[in-house]
Length: 420
Image 1 (cartoon, rainbow, N blue to C red):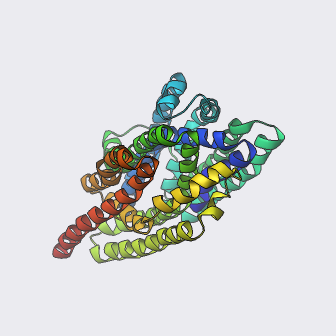
Image 2: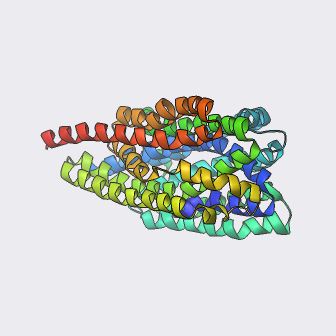
Image 3: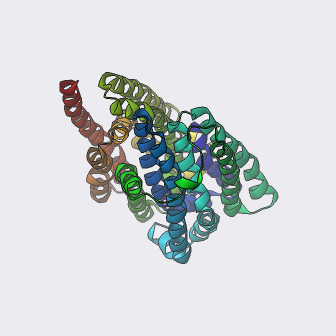
């Protein structure tokens, strides 16, 4: 997941230094649209991978294979629909997401290749989830690293040598993911694998589809809610600070994204173990893997908190040398990440509920930070504190959502201990 996060980081670094701060702002505007596209793939991938883990724990191998086929078919159908809608209404969507006259063309040029290759992105992440849940985390990691290394190699070629700008960065990402998908298909085409392609698996199964959507609804709503929040933040930042404020948020978001993806990687490592032991009613092992994951996740988010408070300028200069952007981003980073150390626990707790099929609790918890806390704060605090109010809304919502997660987890653990 650390390697996977480098897609956005590398694109941002090359675009920030090779094209400029306005292009970086355009990329920030485009990101919530990308997240909405990815949300549909996440819903299918996370839900289906949880089903696979539970089915394997129950020794129901035939059902697990049918889930694999349903993942691919669903991702193709959903990605095609998202691509069609996105290409038809691209510019109005980007303007609604915070694009100005100066940044619209950058966001547009980046999103066109991303939307055209959307089906590859969906299949790529869906099959990576399947690889992890079927006992092949190394193969999943290899596919990701191959894609990232190729993306890093192609970015300077397309951006600088071929002078394609932001469109070149997007094209490099799509080509690298296409290579990764080919690698994944070679694994699942092997008939000696427990999960492999066969002729009987391609027909959509109503129960598998509904169960996948039900379990995957939590990460789907989390991604959608996050995208809505980013849209609101982009518009608030444009109102109170202009395009440079949006670019600053883009820089901060990409720094935190690296560490958040590490936590997501820990979550995805926990997911099949927690799901398997939940299916086998081994509650003490399920809680043990949760505690271990939460500990390491907190260590990761504490590290980024310390870096942001001690040396924020060093982090910002990774993306730009423009003085105006650096001057705005450094104090903003200190405010936004003031309580980031508690975010890891909140993320792990939400994923834990998803991993054991408690979709309702996972959905509620995923929405607390994004909808119940952050949106009202992002709208109200700027009325009193202007631009700083937008920045303050993020750490306050982080703190409140972590407290909510702790309360829900406490009562859930009590239920498991009574059932043990």
